[in-house]
Length: 458
Ligand code: NAD
Image (cartoon, rainbow, N blue to C red; front, side, top):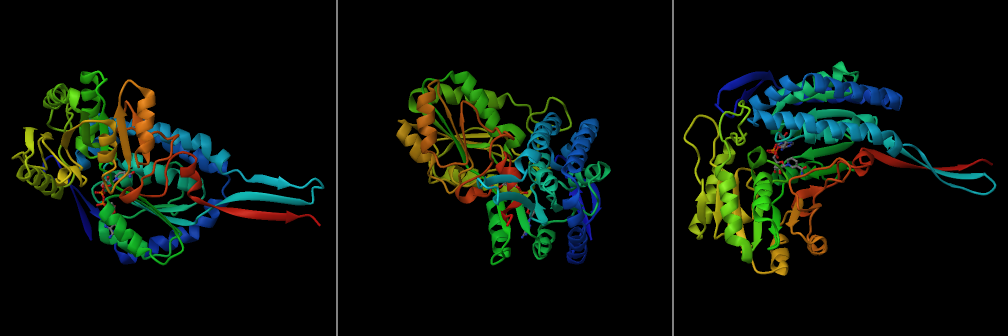
């Protein structure tokens, strides 16, 4: 079987890859199962050295890796370079923290020294890593780097929209000293992911949409294995009346439209205090109109194509639904008539929570802006969602921001920033945004199970 890789900017075939099927998935699972114990016994310093060598290779090949990413997902080249640069601090965090986090810990010893209690961190075993295309380096590394460092074998299924990058990641890991049967890529779409879940893996780490996340949860139901689901969001931002309007509008527009709006933590809803609604919207629309849309291979391009053609219909339908219910389009609103998957950056006002655009993940360059009368109303609207990945508040007043953010149900909260991820902080969602944690020391421990040692000397 072949997997066709399309260039989203042109619709042309960029590559034809050999794809996996149920038979090869099973064989690869067996290979990983056989290889994992030796990898777990490999000293931590050697595993760290392999990941450090991988980091160096990523740096050395960053230019060509960025071009591959741009070719297959359509990410503007400057943003592909940013992703390759941005993955380095994440790797550095894991290199610095894993040995310390996973060190066996003596938690008790009695005065006579006859009874000791200890916790060790054991790898889960063979883990499935089913990944998304929108930031394949980021969301991939959040999982496979700590999973490998903790002594697991990883069956890595990159998205079918980011398979060239997935294969590059595998090549670089193997060249860096991670055995080829300890990190194994699986190429293909949903059915290959489903075939992977049919194997008796010890953990499933998934990044993708809520719809697929539910299917994954169903597929592993009844099995006593670890399941992590990093899913979508409908992330709100609230702008208070005391902000520097131009600065806030520029920052939030970037949070909404960076990566052509295809980030799990993209700003997807904006609430603005009614006292500054008009100047904020004017500044926001001016900012969006200034974005350069075009060939993602050009250095100056900010808005590229959508990675997936079917998402064009989702955006069209959200805009149509909003229009029907009274929304006004201030800019954009249409698919671009050209080869490839292009949609105009779109700003809507006169929107309400009766509209799909304010409820369902858009995952594209479309945003609705709503006025609010008070902080209480903003909090109510921010929490009126089934998702809970990130939420932000813009104000000069830190106390006010912290009060609002304490009331928001969300995995991450931001004051005067948005669309931001830190390796030092846990990345997680509430509600339909998922279960489990990546990043931070929690995101290292999660690839292990604690083993309790009760040691009596006599
Ligand atoms: P998707 O759900 O379409 O696909 C994700 C992965 O699941 C792909 O590798 C796909 O091949 C695989 N898959 C599809 N059907 C499957 C099945 N039945 N069984 C097993 N695997 C299957 O998501 P996507 O389009 O790749 O990514 C976009 C989504 O991911 C958005 O909703 C975005 O918000 C979310 N996301 C979340 C985070 C986060 O950290 N929370 C990060 C990035 C993206």
